[in-house]
Image (cartoon, rainbow, N blue to C red):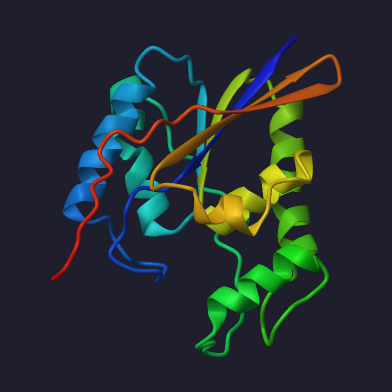
Length: 190
């Protein structure tokens, strides 16, 4: 039996806070995401409890009449509880040293273990087609778990939203990026 896990990065949000909603564009992206999955069988939807992740899958769940089953383990990785003006460099360093952690934050290995536990549980349940909505850093760590070449640069190239498919067949894992960003626009301020 093949299991398919669709790993979705949330749509564009107004901020990084737990209660940050989607932007106007993000709500349109959520509708596009729903349309993207219209001909794909999805039996279970598990988002992060962050508002932006839940709002990203609401149109899909309404269209397919699916229950939203929140799992806090899909929450974004906490890099640090202290403000980090150089957070991008700090994040990059955590991709190179998976044990590195900052004040109040998780190491890459700790966050990876958290999301891998969710995936392992999903592989044991009765559903064959599961969608998990999460966040860019946590998604990247999961992909890195299955493909060591995935790192900081690939994280930077993720889009909002983004979709990867993990197919599990006969103890093999196949990873594929499915989302092709359609509405990327470059804005130049003069």
